[in-house]
Length: 484
Ligand code: NAI
Image 1 (cartoon, rainbow, N blue to C red):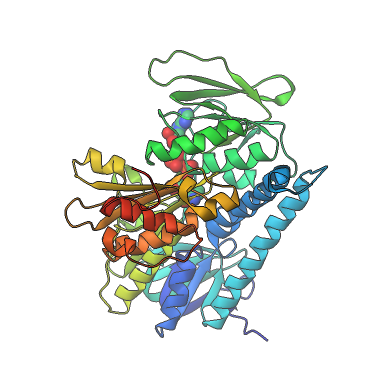
Image 2: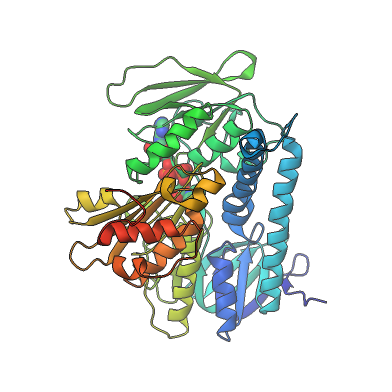
């Protein structure tokens, strides 16, 4: 039997709890910090108003990947004849796909509960609000609990941004959370925003048979990623039937006949209006904002980043006030689950007196489009913008035996190296297994390996990582499995 560690106040009563570290928010930032803090011998209280696992586990990374898997299976079955298999009458059962997604999430949530209990972390259900440097007030349904702590970590996450345009609150508008809760597929969907969330959902819904139109304000989708990578994905996006409008600004949403949405948009440069698009639903994916409301951050006087974009922290994750740290999306930086977890570890290290700082040179970013994109370190685009001279090594998956056997040979690996020392400064992959493969380049960037060292590492054959080895050869003296 597992020990139950959840604190609840007796109805109506106020209670006080004392601990070493109080953490607000049990997402991948907060719950990892809690486990790690407890393992350092600290008494940790973890405060959560929703479900443990936060956005990533309940409304983001995990449920979307469960649906991506459904689309992969569906696509593979549709293409079965290419592989010498017969599969007729293939259909998607959306309700079952959603139920599977929910089961995957529920299993992981249960796992996090077990981890917390197993590490003696006290889980406190309720909304946490900062009172002073050592106190968090936790509001539950009928009572309040005061948590007194030597240190506090704020890990309150983020929420979807809403465009300040007419019609943005109409009932046909959904955000990424609501998109994951649909009980049936809409016939048609307009996605506003061609960032990470917009692109992942565009593939999911288009592959499930929804007529998708994607409208992006900037010249290119996934604007931070090098265009040679995004081009590979755009081709597949169009082949999946998605109508893509770039350089296009959505200006208003209107309820048309039968309650359907009419999306008005214009040329982002000239302001010339385009013909509006009608759809059953509109998915707004125009970024996320730090979730500061109700935390008491401003009343306490914690310094924020310029334009109120998150809690200001230094590279030890300390805020402007003694004893208070902040990690993850609430700090307004790169909103990535794995980064939040790492920041949590750095914060705990500093709290327990082990000096530790964040190093952002090697933060991988994984995007689950088709094919996948993954990047780490400096990009070719950034190097050019910053006037940094780099050497680029490339290798196409078309020259990789494993990719050819998989029937997934579109895409390539790109390594960015220092022109003299050959030190790997960054890397990017578009193609099969990109989001898993990026770990190898991340290790190389983190530990300053050279292209020569990667090229001279024996890679198992036939495997996809050989493409990384060949890109390293290319940066060094030329890829071996590529004619000049
Ligand atoms: P985003 O910032 O990546 O993209 C939003 C897009 O909306 C931008 O390209 C922007 O130009 C566009 N946009 C803004 N206003 C517009 C308008 N009026 N008309 C048309 N387009 C407009 O934000 P997104 O995709 O919502 O993601 C939010 C956060 O979540 C990001 O920080 C992202 O890194 C993170 N995330 C990461 C994932 C991953 O790493 N796999 C998955 C999902 C989210």
